[in-house]
Image 1 (tube, helix red, strand yellow):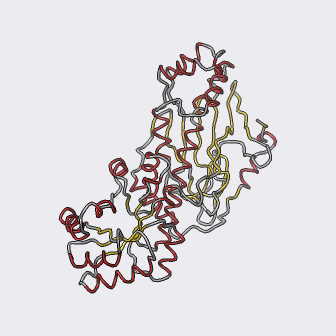
Image 2: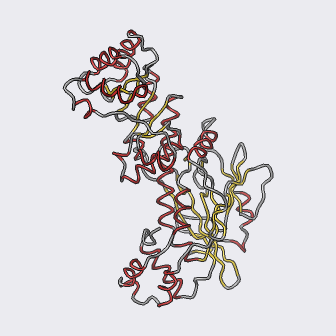
Image 3: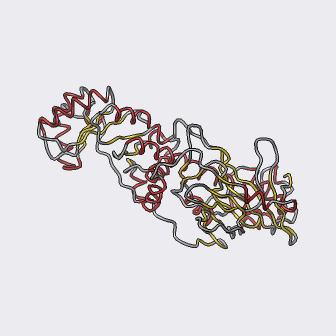
Length: 429
């Protein structure tokens, strides 16, 4: 994994730690949800798999080191630092909340305990990777909830902020409850069901819709989904009905979805195709889907792209990665920020989950009858158990979302604050 995939100040701090003789200090860094995104009562955690891949494979290649050495910022960096980077590997410990878990504001996601340089450099990557997938998984959960049991297919790669974001977003959307994705690489890489048949260009490439529909049926048989709104959706539905089976169903991608779906349902039923399904797509989100269902539209499935792949109404989240304690010279010092609106709590923490509320405590505490949410993931630079599959994480998420999480779930800090006596009070950093 490319060691330069980070902010420059992570690397200047690394050089500074080394020059100050602090490279053997053991720091604990904590990834925390400072604030929930707007329009969100909770988030569904995703992206931990990327943290694992990054930390286990993080290294610096000779050309990357040569690039850094040429920067003015590193003009005074000692030779030993470059030797250190050449041999760099992550050797620390990571405890993390499992993917597919519901979390709230103020709660920790993971902590990294490692020699301070090893813990500092990953900050940028971890914040980016986990925050992005968590936003998409949460959006997918909201959309799937609005669909009330109807399948939702993730269609968003062409609208994602990069092709790779499309792949990772597809995985996160599946975890959040989507039935599948249009992204072939996501299917190959993560074992996600892939779905998709033909676009409007397919229909337009033939002289008639009938010919286009017939050729698609010849290829796909019972998997055929005819896209019927290239010209006139009602006439497209009639053509699909005349051709008959084999047919999974039809898709409408524009227009008045309520009116069209009702007319199309009558056409299909009248042709003896009562088992043929209607899929709707086209600038959908959870609000529009909820409205379509509330109006009684006979829509069986939804394809969602832009709003899902970008978490359109909430594209960012206030996550932080801060030093909470450091061991230097045989002593442990507990650290925290005290600046207005950005205060943090010192000490390595554990989140204990009870049925009614969550309890935030120091990692050395116990809480009978609860589940400790931060679980060992990497110990001594080695993965302690295999990363779950996307399907396994999806099942965990489904359990976490049933019943639907309530807004304002309480996180009790009282035990933690009780333990932070004068000896453990934050030191401004």
